[in-house]
Amino acid sequence: MDSHDRDHLLLTAFLAGELHPADARRWDEHLLACEQCWLAVREDRAGRQAAQVLRQPAPPALADRVRFAVELAAADTLARERPRHGVRLRWRWLAGAGALASAVAVTVALLLPGGREATSMPAAVAAVARYAETVPARQQEAGPGRPAAPVEVGRPVTVAAGGQRMVLRVWRLGRVEAVVAVSAQPFPMPARGVTGRGMAWTARLGKIGLYCRNGHTSELVAAPVPADQLAALAARLPPA
Amino acid sequence: MGADHRAFLEATLPHLDVVYQVARRAAGDGQDPEDLVQETYLRAYAAFGSYRGGNTRAWLAAICLNAARSTARRRRRRPWEVPIRVPLDTLPVAGTGGGRYSADVADVVIAGLDAQAVSRCLALLPEPQRVCIVLMDVAGYTARETAEVLGCPRGTVLARVHRGRRRLAQLLAEAGVTHGQP
Image (cartoon, rainbow over all chains, first blue to last red; front, top):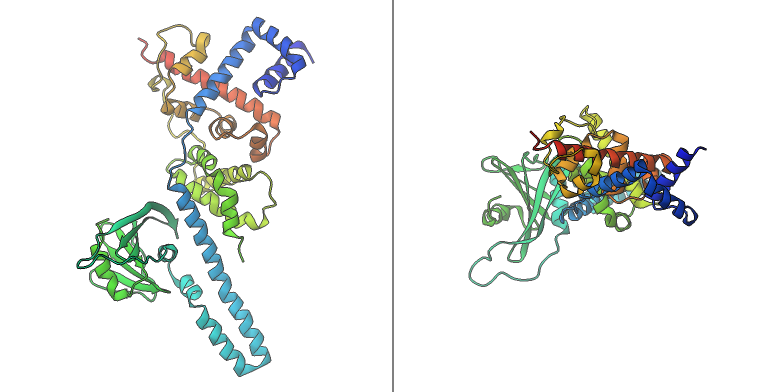
């Protein structure tokens, strides 16, 4: 190893903050005398400092978005695994005792409607319904005499499900909290959806009612209320 | 059943900020960094059941870079390529009023730091140097973590980041000296 190689090793160790104390004095002397190494150190520091300008904190809503996307993925996994479990049970019983097994299979199917419904639901619509399920039920009543004005709860969350990007907001209307998803793409109507006036449709996933209205953007309202009340509830919400 | 999503979120969400730093630089042209972060976490969640522990934030960065690459492949475009060659004299870096740039590179750079200019100059660096700078100087990974993310020796990382920083400083200084000159 020649002197140049040794100096280069010292330079690398110095820049990494790992210069051995025994070499520190020799390195300091070298740095004072060597223009090339001095320039290398200055440029390294300047480049590092410049790059640090690019640091930017993550947007505050990103954590909510990620958390929701993961919870959604977890719920989907669970929904996919439940029917398989039901089928295994059904075959075992069928092999053992024909008629009794049929009854068990029907019971299992009735106990697990959410999983089957969710898998037949378009991913974007299912995501909105899942989000509405996570909104806690409120106990407070609307003020007497007139319906409460809508109040936004929390921050908007942007998610992508089934290749569709949407912004989710939660609005409180008296004792009901509704999730409103707005997307540039129209929300696909589920197989069991019912078309309404214009290009609107309604559907149901478990206890969550869904109402979709389409204009220059597509707006999907999800809330734990009967489907026939959703249009009226949506009309009380501020325009997207 | 899938991996426990609560345990996953507890282990990974504290690293959201560093993953976001990586995603902002790794996202290809037209790709939203926040979409890339979400994709990273979904991929990581899918793999969490077989994750054997170790450095979680290095694991997340590696997934983020892979996700960016596969998105770019789908779009038939590489994520780390410079979309448009920007003439250096158009970069908005404060000038020094003359003199050879090599004489006071550090002063020129530090005096006129501008995130947009830094971003453009960073995009001009070769990919290996750029990735090392993003991981170490922007996202705050150590050299050892960066080596783990990239699957290369730590010495290689240190050499790349040093060369990259010097080149970045020189590019910024050149832009600063050229800018506003007759």
